[in-house]
Image 1 (tube, one colour):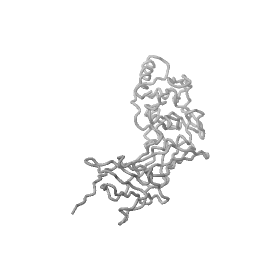
Image 2: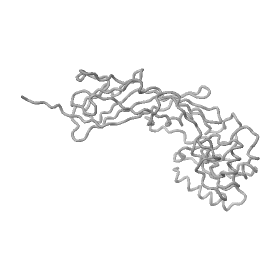
Image 3: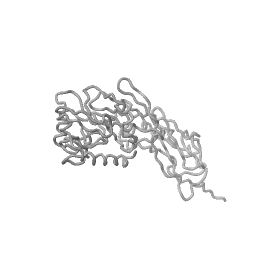
Image 4: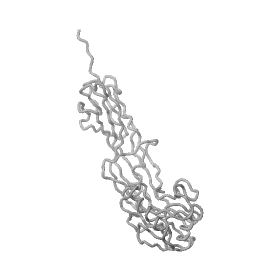
Length: 352
């Protein structure tokens, strides 16, 4: 179900809720749509939106300043569509309910108005869950103040990926400190690793060429990258309020060359140039090497004519992770590519 379609039953539910006395409605008096931080806390520590995760991702090793994200080589791979996270301590929920009072109580239900929050979380009144089970949820006494733990709620970073309305649809619920909910969509180290997959920033594939941008038919173009450009990159993902963490590591394994035309040869023939232990690729061109075969390069067999060829250079990265309790695994390899124009000219000669 797309996000647009998911809103249709929600609208019908809201209309029915307004006509039903004695229930906690999805719309209440006062309040606004919960699209901003709750309780005055910034940095996604607290949020009124069920689309914002509190998972913290920090880079722990590798070159910094990267700007690109990977494209998975497995087109069928998708990150988890949703999971549960701790959102409020009792004190934070009390402050939110009695000041902001506008936000998502589950992935698919928003409560807007102080009375809805205080009825259920302060005064112990039963609330209606229109998309999850059980349908009627017992309330809490005084926000569970004095207890050690968190109120948890489902998180869905990409609503369009939620085809099943029952996924992560529990109303915000209590979990004692140090415990993870016994739910199919409970967070795991693997979930954190998958979340971090597209948070890793990679260096651009800025290759060196000789000759640069302009080549000659049947003469090799040397391609290389300086040492240290491509090294392992590791990021750590942690979920506050739990002991869950995962460290995802991306290791560069090959540079693949696509000359942009069938009228070309690559070196090696596969087009895959190995990445050396020091992070370099190929061998830099030196004077007098024009007629030699480069360990990494291209030889164009026909001039480009009016339009230049589009040379594509893509780095393949192997992705693995380890996390809480010795958990570990692999994620699909990813690629990051750049393209550049290559003008190829015929050799000019003069007959005497």
